[in-house]
Amino acid sequence: MRIAHHTITWGGVVGDPTGVTSIKDLYYRSHGSIIEAVRDIGAVGYEGTEVFDGNLAAIADDPQPFLDTLAATGVELVSVYSGANFVYADVLPDEMARLRRACELARQFGASRLVVGGGARRAMGTPEGTTVGSARHLTRWSTSRPSTGWKPATTLTCRPSWSPRTSSTGS
Image (tube, rainbow, N blue to C red; front, top):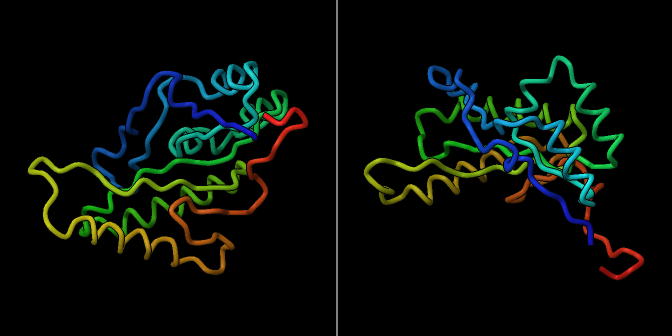
């Protein structure tokens, strides 16, 4: 079986500060270096990793150092995680635009999956219908791009290149 490790543990998770005034730019990010994380992940034997969309957005104009690190360590970028504020119907168009950008980033960096988190917490708890609404928005998202080759699922798949396998040792 192939096992991957998320880069979130290198510095914890933060939100991109531009998201304070712009929902379409509200990405999650690991506060630590994703290059250092991938080196550490590869050094202990993991074969893959997941990175936040915001970490990739931050290096989209200069991807080569990260891509070189993936190649040098033999670690595959398996997935990109993107949190979604599907509980707020009024920001849905901006959320969809941000998720489209996350798809572009996942493809640019060679990830085979986009993992979409479905909601935010509200101060007054979860109003009735929120879960159904979030599910409806996630379904809308997962079925809105038939021409991209992404298959609808809870974990959206770009291409079926990464799947669990059994090693020669059976582990």
